[in-house]
Length: 196
Image (tube, rainbow, N blue to C red; front, side, top):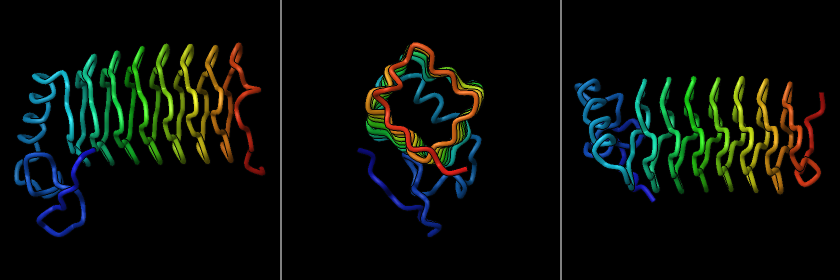
């Protein structure tokens, strides 16, 4: 699991890996972004990385392994996560726009409060993942295993879950609008919808 070093500026945010300051307080955030992207490009297996608050655009995370990393409050735009293997990491309050997670292996993660817009998770293993309070729109989880994942108080709109394993998936107080689940085992999911 990632170690939490607080920002030396006293703001309470976690310091970026390799520094004693958070991303906001770095003197040259553009240079830090380049350093982190180069580090990711050169290392296919990454542990204990903290990039909280950064913004990634057109970044290739595909086929990488991530363990115990902190991506809280991070933004991802047009990023490629296809074939990624990631465990015990945090994406709380992160934003994802037009990202590709096809055939990814995602387990024991938290996407609490995240915004996921126009992303593709088709054909993925997404087990024991927390999407509590997330807003997921225009996205697809088709042909994925979502076993024991949580969508508690999540807002899903125009998001497809066709031919998915929904066993022990919690949709408690979730708002579902235009969420097709054809050929999925919906009877094995736990649905308690919020009163409208």
